[in-house]
Image (cartoon, rainbow, N blue to C red; front, side):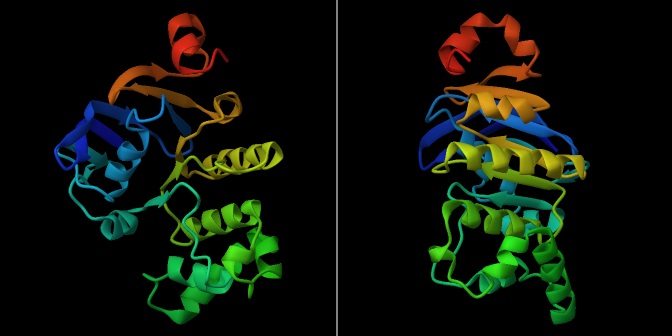
Amino acid sequence: MRVENLDAGYGSVQILHQVSLTARTGDVTCIFGPNGCGKSTLLKAMAGVIDPWAGKVMLDDDDLTHLPSHKTLGRGIAMMPQGGGVFPALSVRDNLRIGAYTIRSRKQRDARIAELLEEFPRLRERYDVAAGALSGGEQMILSIARALILRPRFLLFDEPSAGLSPKLVGDVLVRAAELAKRGVGVIMIEQNIREALRVADRMYVLVSGRNRFEGTPADVEDDRELIHLYLGGR
C-alpha cells in the first residue's frame, strides 16, 4: 500500500503536506509524531474517511484516493478508530454482525463470526453482553475481531492502546504483531513509542504534517535530534 505526496485537511485548514508512505502486508508499520502533526488525518485519508486534496493512495495498481470508506473496506482496507469504535448499547453479537454487513449470505456471515469466536474465546463468553459493559481490554478485542471479519489485507490502528493498562498495551501490540505474521499489513499510530518499536518493522515520523523520518527502528538510533524531540528520548 502506498501513499504518494498526499495533501489533506479539514475545511480551509491544510494538515498534511506532501506526505508519502509505503507499507507491506506482513509488516507492522508505525507512525509517530507530536500531537496535531497529522497522524490520524493520514489514516483517515488512507481509509477513505476523508477525501484527500491532492496526491494518491494506492493498493498495488488500484487507485483508492477518492473512494469512500465502504469501498476501501471492500478493497481490503479496514480502520480501527481511536477508542475502538464499538457500539456500547449493542451486544458483542450485534457489534460483530455490523462488522459483517457486506456479507450477504447469513450462513457465511455466521460461519465467519464463529471462526472469530474460536480465535477470541473471551468474546464467546461475553456474546450477549452490551459492548459498553465490557472492560477496556475486552472492547479492544471486540474492535479487532470486528475489523478482521472481512479478512482485510491492511488493518489501520489509530492509537489502539489509548486508555489501556500497561499490561493490556503489551497484549494489544503483541496481537498486532501476530496479525502481521499471518500476512496482514498493520499500519499503526501509537503513543507508547518504546513498546511499539518492539514490534515495528518500519516506522515513519510526521512533524507539522510533513515526513520527518522513514526507516527501521534500528535506523533511528543515529538520529539523536529526532529521538530527543519527537520520540521522548527513548
